[in-house]
Amino acid sequence: MRISILGCGWFGLPLAKALITAGHSVNGSTTSENKLPLLAEAGITPFRIDLTAAENPLSAVFFNCDILVIAIPPKSRSAEGREYVAKLRKVIDAVIKHKVQKVILVSSTGIYADLNQVVNENNDPQPNTFAGEILLEAEELFKRQPAFKTTIVRFGGLVGPDRDPGRFFAGKDNIANGMAPVNLIHLDDCIGITQQIIEKDAFGYTINAVAPHHPTRADFYMQASAKSGLPLPSFVLELNEWKIVESVTTIPVLNYEYQVHNWYEWLNT
Image 1 (cartoon, rainbow, N blue to C red):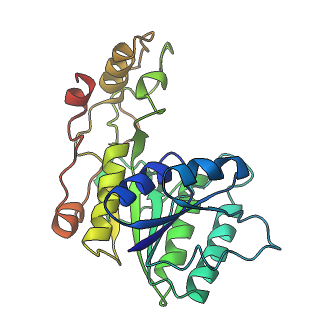
Image 2 (cartoon, rainbow, N blue to C red; image 1 turned 90 degrees about the horizontal axis):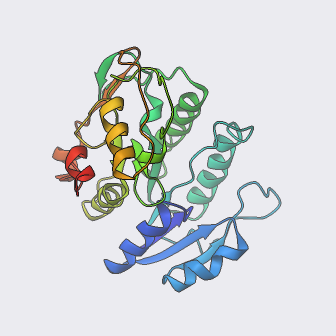
């Protein structure tokens, strides 16, 4: 099977390597000319694709694939946030033009507002942040397309190589909302769930991808900092706005078992 990955970054590059190991052919894109040799060395057919360059048509060869994985997160904290949806419209035009039938869109559990409740894929996300609104607009854009099937996978907070959670709050004091639960996922499970979507041919779904263990921010990040040998943070032990993100599709649709299912066990390995 030929799979194209739009955005070979922190998630897209190791996903591409895992898919190649599983026997798939992989096209991979980057916005950086300097990164093309890195992709080629990994066995990926490399493409430089800049979605902001309006004058350049997107590569027909890149979009000659069975499945397209879109792994380009919005830069919602910068002025580029609003451009994200415009970029995705350009991708959709290419998907339709080149008759790609199946798409995986990487989204985020940041789409859900903190409304002091447990949420799953059946809940209205009700985003109340700019980032959440951008994510919802992007998701709805793909859900409305009749020419191809999209599975939207919403990753929790990302943990893994170069994303050491111990560094996030290390040495900081009086961090608010210390009793709020965390909603996290390890890179290994980001890859595993995406591979399972492909292997199970599970298209047309929305999937929350979050480890089933939700310790408090205070417990998790203090232990994470200690594991990394960093100064411990201190938290205000209060519970303000929060959410626990669960999934009603991961098990029945994918039959997926998390590789990192308990954060305390992971921290002690």
